[in-house]
Length: 158
Image (cartoon, rainbow, N blue to C red; front, top):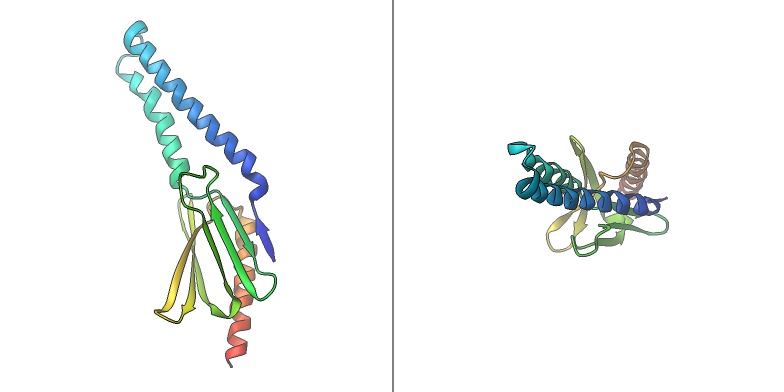
């Protein structure tokens, strides 16, 4: 099964650009208010704080682009940000038989996927992915596919 939200990258770029422009407009508005108009008073700090808070929330939410491919004998997982220099992109590929378990954690608007794979050195390794920008249907499809792989692994072991 293949799952990707790569086609939504222009939307994420637009939101990113809009938030940056809001911040720039807020900074210009604050400077104009502080030195020229003096209408808003202490509320003028909100011109910078609100866009900055929205931008920080957008970036805290995680990497925007998530790709998953379970076709063949290996699982391919990729997670990257639309702004290339912001976060290091994650790209993992491992055989299906190494998948031990997975867990999806949701906190408010932030969703993470934790995948545990077997490893020769440590016994197991946990891989972390941001899936906040996936729709609920995509998350359910991802869970269904991973459950199928785990079920097949259990049947092979027995």
